[in-house]
Length: 485
Ligand SMILES: Cc1cc2nc3c(=O)[nH]c(=O)nc-3n(C[C@H](O)[C@H](O)[C@H](O)COP(=O)(O)OP(=O)(O)OC[C@H]3O[C@@H](n4cnc5c(N)ncnc54)[C@H](O)[C@@H]3O)c2cc1C
Image (cartoon, rainbow, N blue to C red; front, side):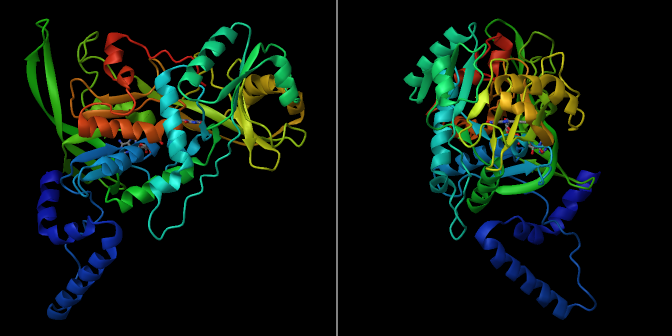
């Protein structure tokens, strides 16, 4: 009923809605025309004139692509779809984001790191391209008449430490990284002490240090830069929550005689903020870029709702996992030369600004996983599980004082902690850009391009991300990345 009533009202207010759905440079001109029309109506009608129903906040009724989630990954896909479209204005793209303050989104709560020190060529290539994108950010994201972006990039490198047990793996990883074009050097404990005299090398057999394209930057700046750019390219942004998909199904038999149901989403329901209204949006493609919540979006499309052990019954294994980041002050600390240090047990830290501050933390073990129901910080976790390791590695950190802390959600892929990219094999028009579990920010520029290539050309053109397809969950083929932080 609500939907029918909404549609009737929508028809009546077609004019207002068309005006309201326009964006960018033409918005002012349209606003001007709208106010002229209002004035004319007011001059011929008695009393005050109010539009029957203001619909300018609603998303359009029809688009080509709906992107669920306006975090860094969703916006990057939007950017590349517009950048790679054959003809200007050829594709109508809508990004649906339920919270424009991004209060719980991973992007703004991350620590902004980028590294090339992965073990898999695909992950290295993703980060190499992304580093190039960040380096030339104003060539990609410049908007006429707007000030240039300053990502506050700190090119301080990552310093990974390996124990005796991890040394051989580190050596072979660095070989792959160099083959892919990354500039990484290996250091013995003695070389480590010479370069970073504040480090206690006990338990360290080998270290690898990134000399180029590694460090950290301001994730907010990237997010806002992408938002600004995609709006200027004609992408529609709407505040609302995707709550439902309407799909058509067709039953088929595969070569083994097994019955499979193919689905195609043709409508996305967007629930408007602070209201019971929703807007049905007809669409040809849906991109699932809902970060930590993308498992729920997949479920809405019926993904994982078949018999266990079948492709239909295979879920998207992405869920929110809470991660704490602590900020501490330590005037005796390592100082300006501090890279992002990742210890043998996963404890990490880096410098934050120039005032003797540092940020860091550690991923909990499976048994220690905190309840993801809220974003409260556990300070005992720092006292018991983080600080002892920090102080052991950097004795000066004995004197640190915690100043603040925050928690954020990893878009955690429980299967293999790597990204999920490309289409679903059965819900053929849902594409994924999710599940990066702690390295999604840095890979977003390259992943957006890969998803856009898949949508527009039907295959990966620049980096072959076949191992990252959804089908691996059904096939049990894990992406074996050994450098997950
Ligand atoms: C503490 C921490 C540190 C990190 N450090 C790093 C790092 O150093 N380097 C790195 O590369 N990565 C890091 N990450 C990971 C990185 O932040 C994420 O992988 C990345 O930001 C994911 O981007 P996203 O756009 O998928 O998710 P998000 O930024 O979470 O965006 C998803 C959006 O989807 C929206 N959404 C969800 N459901 C719906 C719905 N139904 N309708 C409409 N909108 C919806 C949400 O509101 C959200 O804004 C870190 C993460 C955390 C938590």
